[in-house]
Image 1 (cartoon, rainbow, N blue to C red):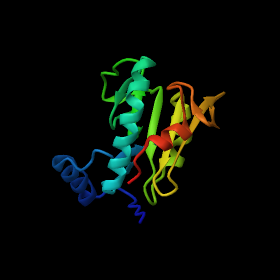
Image 2 (image 1 turned 135 degrees about the vertical axis):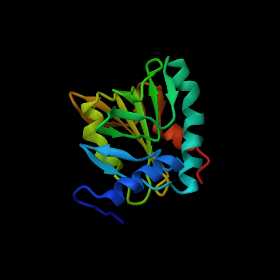
Image 3 (image 1 turned 60 degrees about the vertical axis):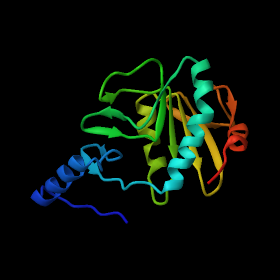
Image 4 (image 1 turned 90 degrees about the vertical axis):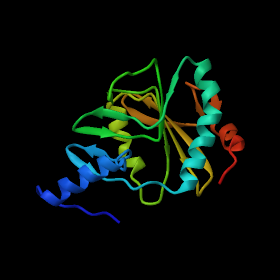
Length: 170
């Protein structure tokens, strides 16, 4: 369900602050100044993400990349929170300007693919998307400012078919 509340409302500000105080805002994003509240994902989402991170971690280390769980990619008034990512070094900041690779796990009604242009504008080299329903993992490389789907991750030196086979799908 998508809900849009226009204008400034005290109750909305209180809701956002309550979410922050309870630690429920970890996946909330700001899209060009618009606050986007994201619910916690289904437990299978976390299981699949864990499987992928486990499979990707040794490859990332060999490539000299550092893993990062959810993080704010962008700036204070315009950021996205990917499920995971890999960085060239430790970012050490609240709002990370880019990442080498971003991992997203699809959830029903999420807007993963609406983030592609944002990730491209922030020079994310590769975008990897896992679809738990289709049991697929797809990878896109940034080429001349746009993503082109490829059957393998050049950064992590792995075929997507290999990752699919390594995952114990929930």
